[in-house]
Image 1 (tube, rainbow, N blue to C red):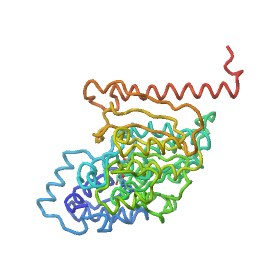
Image 2 (cartoon, rainbow, N blue to C red; image 1 turned 60 degrees about the vertical axis):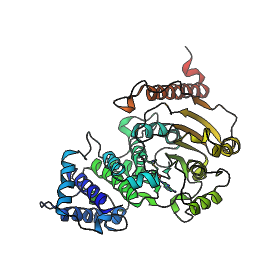
Image 3 (cartoon, helix red, strand yellow; image 1 turned 180 degrees about the vertical axis):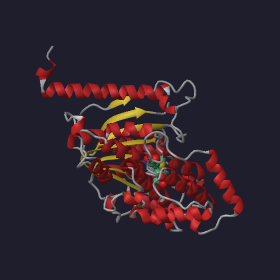
Length: 408
Ligand SMILES: C[S@@+](CC[C@H](N)C(=O)[O-])C[C@H]1O[C@@H](n2cnc3c(N)ncnc32)[C@H](O)[C@@H]1O
């Protein structure tokens, strides 16, 4: 990350932590406060120690000029970086890193998954696992987690999970609900700064719920987000195959421009990489490998493989080997940052079970740009269709398990 962008985002990060009382800063204001704030955060929890690493946070390499400092300060006086409402989870911090770093957007396809998209992906993948085995055992991963929008959404879903049939007052103690949510959530990304931001956000959410500073979050509670090339790493323990009940992501769907890297990935994923393949294809294979047998994989991805020659092998040879359950055309939705047409695909890590593939086919796009994209007509229609179908399936299962309950 370039130093100027790093300074601009460093100011935002330290401001976020101080305003939400997650760290205490000296009263003086100036560049030293930002570096001091990062040092305080790095000392507060072992997961944050890379905040003082110049290879991760470039502001350690270059001092900021007085004019630059004034501009950075001014920017965050005009733009709110803190969280509204009762949750402190740094969605704005993630979005501003994406907005500031053209390099992360262009070379690694950093593009945050909005929380409302993440919720739908998790509803279709993590939620069934949570309902089946409960929050103490469930494990999920986003292997291209960026600054952690999906991870934070999963964290809250797991933390607040109440098993069916249990009453609210029998809920687990607050501390255990947070610890087990941290145990369940895993992420990997190539971008070391995005990774430390994702770790900070998980800790900020935890500390804010505990109403304590980050330094008071027990150091033994795991924050499992690692820097790695998820497609090629053979050493990262979080990428052990067959480990996760739910694998959820919005993988990069750019093509690799470096020919050496492109060939390495092609050799590692020969079953899908053909022609000038998009990274979305090897990511589907990776996500499937990470899931436990019958685990669920849900992704928001580009639909380019349906239209271009490089997708032929994937569609004709690879997809038929998957137990595909949902294909949702989201190309008519407005998903901020996602200029290319997308779809949601859900499958289980097992051979096809001969059941139904539920498809939601697009009829038309948004008639006008929605002010709030989560309330767009097309997106709302998709959400309604998914929820109706899930409700119907739940009813069918309940009737099958106890037909007497529903006798008129
Ligand atoms: C569309 S963004 C994902 C956003 C994220 N899911 C979220 O919750 O906001 C794609 C991410 O893929 C990461 N990425 C690209 N190539 C990767 C690789 N080989 N291994 C791991 N991450 C990678 C990028 O750094 C970027 O953060």
